[in-house]
Image 1 (cartoon, rainbow, N blue to C red):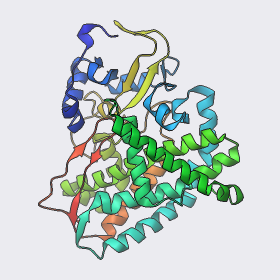
Image 2 (cartoon, one colour):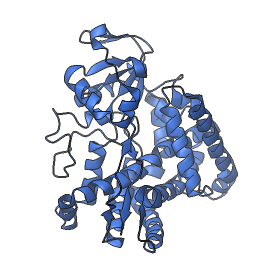
Image 3 (cartoon, rainbow, N blue to C red):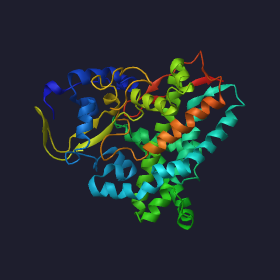
Length: 388
């Protein structure tokens, strides 16, 4: 437990609505602080996160009592060292830059075209539900190999797992719903696994089968991919569109080829990080300055805070595609750097954004709708209503 001067209290509801005011205070006054309401020690400065995320012998991803492990099984994200690297190597043929550009890129384009051709028949709608959700769900179906799952179901089970692994208040209804969602995924895997055994492809399910991973490993890693591969791209697509429509001069700069669509995505993901936190377990007693860490304490590496660190960015509180983003830690900074980073950049920066603005040139934010964001461990817009 941290000394009393390093304790910081939050209002959980206000923190869920907007964590950034508290995170700014923490960065300036208590960059390492115990938050009783979350029963965790938060590390909020970018350089501290960058340094200590790599120190896996102390701040371990292995969390047998963590929510993700309990609810989804022990996936590669909750392993360190050789165990983690072996599973990461097994899935690499599915998520590599080469596979992404040679195979997934065209499939993502086809999915976007199909969705946008349908949207053209309408005069407006919610881009979260009408575009970002079905596109990210279709992309995830393709990459995981669960092509037997409907888009709405992919979104439902992903949200259910995200809610479950962020359920630090211990709400039993959220936990129960999460378990129902993981059961649905298991049923879909069981239904299609024989097809992948007989006709292997580049999907996550197929590559893990070919690599000889156990059934337990395969299922846990598919659930991991769904938990992070649906909601985060969905929120980033819709959120980046909202940011560009809110700052038309920056949109124009991209359309004039002064900047790229990828610049927009990466700046949005720095500014409002879809994944705001990654948990760790203290594996052994450790000391940082005057702060003592005890074995099995829970640590939250606050990526969303690090991405707004005043010491690392010139304009941290603003959406500004022109600023230097070399210090961003959106995808992590250590051995657990997001395995799906290349796929996310392709789907969002090379497909979702350019195709949307090309197909809907009159896209505008609805004058009667206020865009609201929610979450701190995971954060995204509730809806982004537009006309076109």
